[in-house]
Length: 73
Image 1 (cartoon, rainbow, N blue to C red):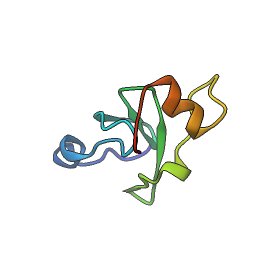
Image 2: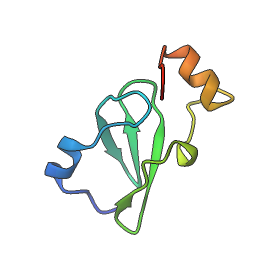
Image 3: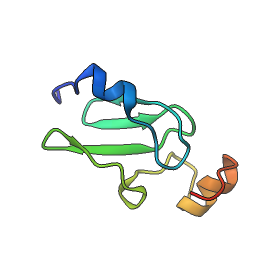
């Protein structure tokens, strides 16, 4: 089990694509909108769009943006 991030840090972090809150699930942060998964490496959240794991059934970041109506991200 990955160590939990500081709750105060989690309160201020948002998904850089959807701008939704993130929740910790093991060694990843998961976006409330769409379910993008960002890794936590050595206790540091990696919130880079290119590092995000796409939800099942979504083939690309562009397809994700279209599906969830994300503009300008």
